[in-house]
Image (cartoon, rainbow, N blue to C red; front, side, top):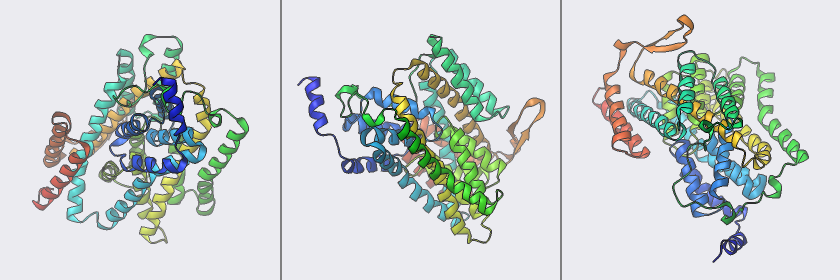
Amino acid sequence: MSVMTETREARTAFPSLAEAVPVWTRIALLSFGGPAGQIAVMHRILVEERRWIGDDRFLHALNFCMLLPGPEAQQLATYVGWLMHRTAGGLLAGLLFVLPGAVAIMALSLIYAVWGDVGIVSGLFFGLKAAVLAIVVNAVARIGKRALKGPAMILIAASSFVAIFFFGLPFPLIVLAAGLIGLAGGLAGLPAFRAGGGHGAGKGPHLADHASLLGDATPQHARPDVRRMALTAAILLALWLAPTALLVAALGGDNVFAEIAKFFSAMAVVTFGGAYAVLAYVAQEAVGTYGWLAPGEMLDGLGMAETTPGPLIMVTQFVGFMGAYRNAGDLPPLLAGIFGGLLTTWVTFAPCFLWVFVGGPFMERLRTNRALSAGLASITAAVVGVVLNLALWFALHVLFSEVRRVTAYGLDTEVPVLASLDPVAAMLTAATLVAVFALRVGLVPVLAGAGAAGIALHLAGLA
């Protein structure tokens, strides 16, 4: 059978929106392990199994989503759903990707608020912190292996780490600088800036775009239409920002709900580079600036996100829950927490649909733009340094009970008080690192084993 015949027959079986629901539901329920694992699941199901979209088009969509602020895996699902079934398909894919994690994190947040200081629960999260640290270190190694293909990319990664860890420079500034450097290098045609994107998509046989169900041509609805895009932008902007404006007007800017809405709305605009990079920014602000939760609790929340399906950025729902729970005012604390968590999720994910639906038509015109790919490669390299910063920040707060801030000579960083080292936490962290790197144990067994070890250590009086 020729390729063209295969393509024509494939297009006769183009799935309806109703037929897409179980596929996106399956992807959502299997989306454990951070953006790299989620993207791999999507590639296996959408490209290799279903043949809905070709490899090159999948990678182009991923490149675009990595340039956007927010969770690239959820935006990738939204983008592919939009390409396949217009706006309704994008909404379906994006919302289903978020739903399982939102339900699970809300349930765990309620349990944490009510029983978080109960011994066994504390022991469980003590163990999960060690596993989360190992997973983040593994993410540094995994992303670095794909992104740092030469001296230029290594230098960008090292510079971004130094800038954020030692000097506290703003994360958006670091990403912007890296992107401009890569764009300039790509426009100049420098070999060091010729790179592909991202977390990688898979190792199966290459599926050409013209052999997929979507095909190689740009669908009519994916072509730029200024009137339609302006209407879409107006509707999505109103849905995203109206709750924030109403809360600030009704409650004042200092109310916890207004603060949550403002902070996470701003985060949705400036947090480029993937989930781990976003979490570095959220952890610094939620812990250091707002005081909504302690460093160890931020790790507990990330442990929840790692052990449930959906985007890792869903940990922000836990952050919003705890911030509102502890500053409930006249509301019952649990009700305040539920509202704070749902508000956080709304303002975090609503703009993701705006970026995709408005920016997608333009990106479909840039599928072969090499300068854009070079800017992406440099941003990805900078993200390696930012994630390394996150790993060290976690290590400081997992392994040491005391850290102090150093601000002399232009520095703005944290250093551990060596005498406060927790030997039990150090041994458990070392064991999880061995499991992840040397034994190559999977994500779920590592998390389950670390949680069980934490409970056992608590029962033995050691944690």
